[in-house]
Image (cartoon, rainbow, N blue to C red; front, side):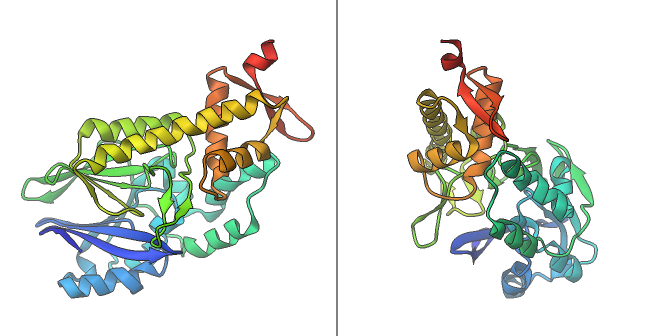
Length: 319
């Protein structure tokens, strides 16, 4: 799909959801944003490049927005087709992009320690999506610029929350921001139009700050991985929906704490899933983020429970 003469949205599908990567073709450099899952290059990217007359070897860099396997699993296939391609990611996500064991520990280990492990399929599916490990060539920082030529410069923005090192790409020429999964509304909607999963994030404050970062740019377009192109009034509406989701989670968790002597991690996850929705295993990440936020704000306390931590309302504890 041609968005502008120099920007392509390559649209695909994975597990019933949209999976889109983006091609920016400047006179000095051609850049791909994300590489999808291991099958995405052969099944989607290379056929699209052939149709539009772009040799794979022309791709100078792949900007990996973040350390979720459906965004970097195709790196090895791209490196085979374009041996000189640079893999770019934020330094805080490099280890989770290049080391599957680090990735599994960062994403899944806490839930087991807190008494509500992820289902085994989360581990097996992630290993399958990881693809052969490929080194990251450029461990980026916030604000670094890539010159595509002809006064077209894009900026790498650190937009953490969904992962610690999430990058978004700001394109001032088109007033467009490529957000990957940095902001997720009230959850991904499947291609069939059904809620597919809740927004997962590691840190709720970082997530809110990233919403504010994007909002401050006043983009005319938001270009995400799992959503249709958003423009005009859809942009502020999506940002507000994303902010409102965080507020709903916080209210729900405070209500759960107010009515429980002590709240286990499982009870927090299942309570948020029931009160906010949609269902999904990734509530484990979002629940952890909100519990940590309430503790840091002094609104809840973590105490030792029967084999694992439980949380109590600070107000209840003081009463």
